[in-house]
Image 1 (cartoon, rainbow, N blue to C red):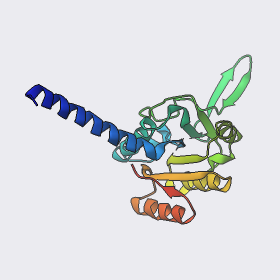
Image 2: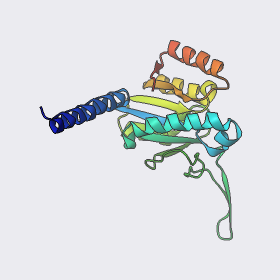
Image 3: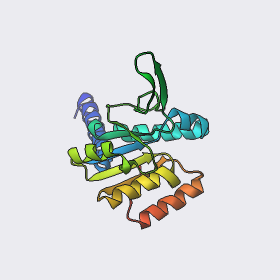
Amino acid sequence: MNTTAKRTFVLGLAIFISSLSFSQTNLKFQNKFVIILDVQQEFTENSMSEDSAQKLIDSVNYVIENIDPKKVIYVSDTTVHKVLTISFKKGVTIDTTLSKYGLDNRLKLVNENMFCKTGGNAFESDELTNFLEENNAKEIIVIGLMAEECTSKTLLGGKEVGYDMYVIPEAIVGKSEKSKIKTVKKLKKNGIKVLHL
């Protein structure tokens, strides 16, 4: 083989190996929906250190990049995102619809699958459960905030209604690292599957 042929072969081999590792990464997430829970500016700015918030956003964005964009779901806590609207025609109203402005601005937005929740368990939202049923969801990953609270309640709530539920420890935040690890172990004992990035 001449030098040009060797270089072409090596380059082709490198691209092939790179594509294999990329497709293996995607296999973990294949056919799964992902719920991004409570990754809102209010929480990431006021309840987390800048470093912890950036780590979470990077991990969540990695998952978003490696999953079918139609299967990404953003869920927000309405207690954080309420807008008071005063209008001469309509009077005073409180808008609890989720907008991209409630989400952390570093979060990748790949669709308009945005839902609100009013409690800890996102599966109490009829709009969310209807969306999942209409799209034949069977396996769901939950990532975001907080491990001990809404993340756990949503994971267990989804399992209770019959979904295969998954958590990615690197893409959730707990009150402390020790508390998060303890919560993930407890979730695993309750039938929640653990994936890693």
